[in-house]
Length: 186
Image 1 (cartoon, rainbow, N blue to C red):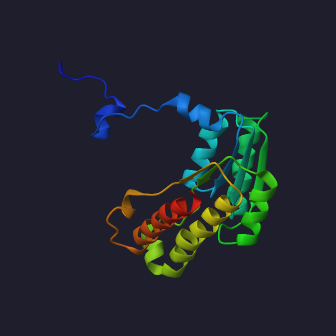
Image 2 (cartoon, one colour):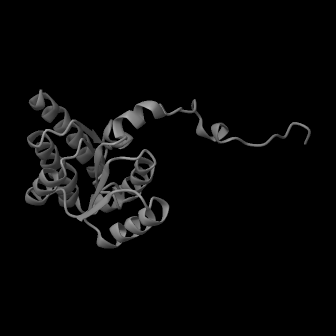
Image 3 (cartoon, helix red, strand yellow):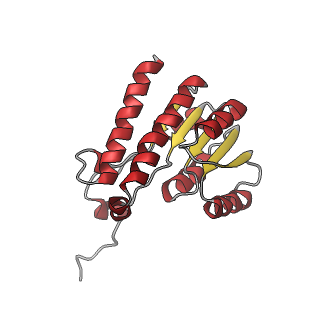
């Protein structure tokens, strides 16, 4: 009992704790128009919360699911009442809607979190994984280049490194789409 001590989160990580460079993050976001695809999902909604803290000029959230988007809007109104938030219902696979949104709001930064991420569900729905994760990424990256977006960040997964399933493979190909489009943008 004398050797017991309080447990720290770093004890459970199994690796060194990562320290965020908040100055760089702030420079990327402060007084910029930020566009988040898949903003109502688990990752997108957390990104939205974190980004809102850095006072973007505008925060454009793009989400297909109306209920998730409604919950996100309610949270933003409560926690960040002065945030200039523009909520859009849309699908990253819809080139017309994506181009309309980027032309109208001219984001400086796109954080692309729209994706199907649940392995067992995607194993049973491979066409949806391909359409959203690959085609949706291509649509959004193409529009980002066309509308001269300064920075595009794709949120991916460790399952894309050596993919062993449909979801991981679709995310790996989406990463390759981003790399290829980056070459075209130069």
